[in-house]
Every structure is written in structure tokens, then in C-alpha cells.
Length: 105
Image (cartoon, rainbow, N blue to C red; front, side):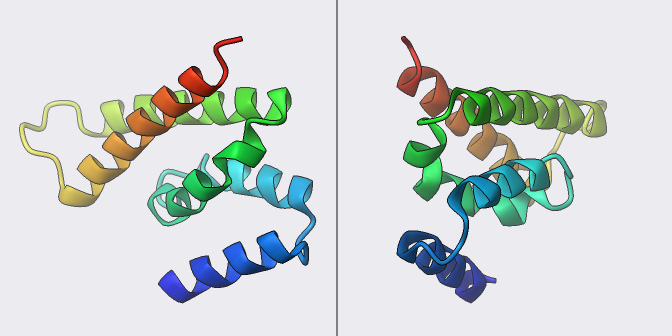
């Protein structure tokens, strides 16, 4: 999976992928809770490009809040979270913070 992430990043930076379409696909992929932990590592390096589009920022904020709510519901009643769930939760919180700070205006 690490190889795929590096390859996609390289293709994106070289302009081989349609940037707008790829960023939209990336955000849409995050809507699936089971896929989100695998796709989240792609978001951070592309955050500056996402922040150039208010539509993408709003979509990403919406998806992050939705995922956090799904995680909350899925984990309600549990005293201990699985490590991957904890990492996904923390990554989403960090991503929300970055988005809010980057888009104060």
C-alpha cells in the first residue's frame, strides 16, 4: 500500500492525474469508514491543493465530521479503542484542525 501511495503522489505531482478529479475522488473515498484509514495518508500531502478550492474544503470538512460521528457511534459503549480506530480518529481531528487554521478567512 505504501508503494501505491508513493506512486499516486508522484503521478499527481507530475500532472499525470487530473488534479481536480483526483482530489474529488479522494474526498469521496473518505466517506467509506473502512476505506478511510487507507486513504487518509494521501490527504495530508495534498492539503494545500485542497485548500485552494472552497468546494473541496467544505466537502472535506463535511466528510471528516461525518466520519468522526460514524466512529463515535461505532465505538459507543467501548472502553478501549482498537489502535487503527484510534489513529484514524486522531488523524481526522488533526486534519480538521489544519483545515480550520488554513481557512480562517
